[in-house]
Image 1: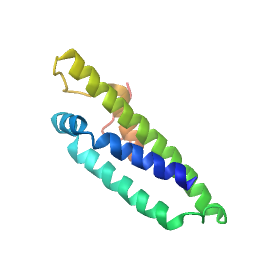
Image 2: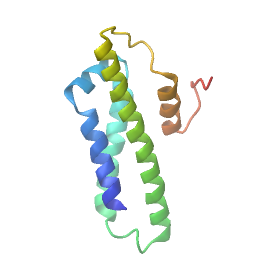
Image 3: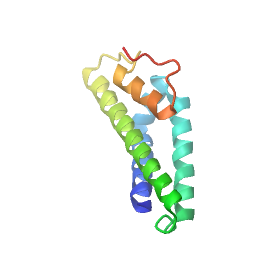
Image 4: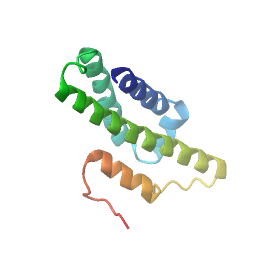
Length: 121
């Protein structure tokens, strides 16, 4: 499980560190949120290297790692959709980046664990 979590964390960071993605994130006004996400992912990588192999013997840790893995899959989905949306915008050459699609806004709120400021309609 730890290997899967480490792989997911690395995949998310790699996608976010693509030059064109970083530029688009700044233009879309998401730089602060993405920096927070990167920081959390780096902390996750640090924790995972510290707990390698311990989850098997510790039920509470194993459950926490499973939950973390689920959240990382959600984060990976959001990052993939951001990249997809970036590619759509760049291919359309419209430059319309004012608002993210509603689905991305909802997923971002879910990752933050809050519905504050979110519109679900």
